[in-house]
Image 1 (cartoon, rainbow, N blue to C red):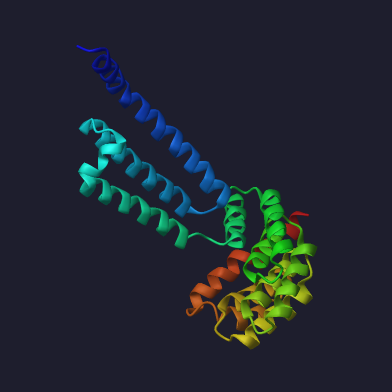
Image 2: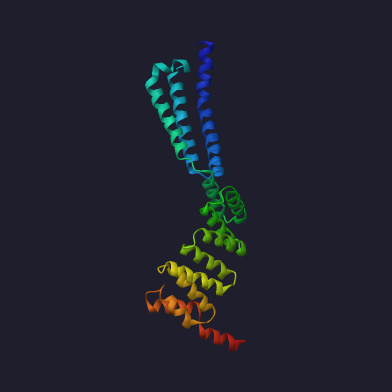
Length: 254
């Protein structure tokens, strides 16, 4: 056996290990790339490209064909090349814009309950894309979930100034006022929401909850009836939040 054949055999024996290492490293790079860019297409495209690249390597290795002579096997090589180019083209055409990538990155931290990091990314996006209301809405929600109600109110007011007829935004602003203890202003926003969309049952329920917390059952009932179609369901809900007998017992015990 010639020295060339011995070297070729050694390379062939090591090819499997190199392929596994290449696949492993490629998947790691693809994973962290999609984490940074916030786009699953990046990971999927990289994985597809890696797989087709390995197919070409396997084909050349199994055929023992030098690269310059692949023209003799142009049918297989052309198919593999077209598939790889199609994968790259698909990744390019489905690439996500930078502001949406930042939004997705922030959303990922929201899912992890890392609100401060999410807020930092959303603010970065707002600084570069101040007209992106989707990012601003995510920022307002992050502030609310992080307990920074004053900043959440500021962001919701900005959103409402850009879209004053959005009932959901008024309802969300009302919820922030409610959590901040400003019940009167919360009711104002909830009622604005109802005026814009009479079918938004969440706003009715939110007003009912405020009246129940204020021990004003009579005021709460008309709004809760919009939420609960059956009277017994509404009464059960009221008793869950407001139990006058329990209140009397607490007073006696005190």
